[in-house]
Length: 172
Image (cartoon, rainbow, N blue to C red; front, side, top):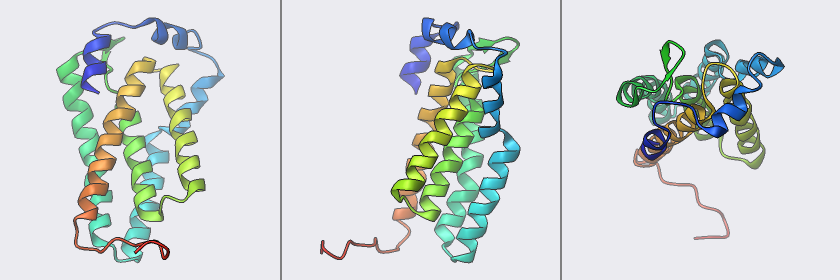
């Protein structure tokens, strides 16, 4: 994420300009996938499932992960200082938060193939919505990278919570 931020610098790239050609198109409706209200509904649902299952380390991850996503995206926006319009843009905070919440879904519900596929498609659609509206495409990629780091860190910390990992019956 940091390497990409330094590589793109303060302005847009050729890839960013290509995505910006769709600015004002119907693709802006894809902002639904990163909308704070949409993400909040998913987050509350995931939190409810984790509480219902009494998976307390996951409850903590579901609460702390999104807060870390918001804080870290704001921190890195200040570090990189990349502007789009009148706002700092890199990394995309909406994309970061969306990816962290999708990561929490995978942690709480489980990483079955169909859940992972839906999460990937959801993330790509959300990134596209950001890339043609408020952000450059590379801002959305930066948000994806930052969100992935946070979600993976949460998964690692939950793994250290003392719960023994589930083993496949064929593998001891």
